[in-house]
Length: 285
Image (tube, rainbow, N blue to C red; front, top):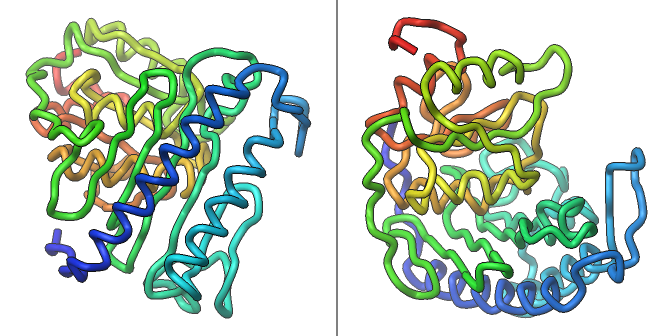
């Protein structure tokens, strides 16, 4: 894969500062409002939750970005795209902006509504090469994870050490359910991880699933095709990339921002993870 183009050091520094402040704001709001106090409502169906916290945090994010980076394009889960000939286009696509902020105000909203401590705030700045800056606020762990291209991954300001995982056996694999007919098939994935003597976890936040691999807590994260949106993963993917993880699509093609199914893995275990997704037995599972 070609090396991503260098971005302005000044832009990265300012973006990290602003994103960090927004992540801290979000963590405070989420912890103060978790549970059904958050005025939940349904969107497309009864399990497609949205809360006033989602809306409030996204509006706040947009206001701050507009003040700090006038004219910047923003794409969010609740209010869509903001500027340009095609508000939903990503950098590098026809009609896309040079830079795009992508926000998911609460990833894992169903957990948040239920008061289950597994949700996060995600914010990324993306250019035509992929994620440039990203923050994940994990309010229940009291952690702000931040990364920028070429600068590594930090947790509450401290550099995160490299993963020490060397075997899929005995490790955790994070995934989210696939829709009928989409890859990977969840049943096969359960069988495959058991055969590999690994533990499968599905916990309801794509961003936090990827983040666990970046932090060295899990060996692999697998998200199915048609199972997520760009705002679910953009912030976490730069964390994984800066932690040195392999990021690829479900066929094993490396990509900085795969949008139709993805694998994030400790590099030494990436081939095994790809074979697991393909449902093959060539790795001895």
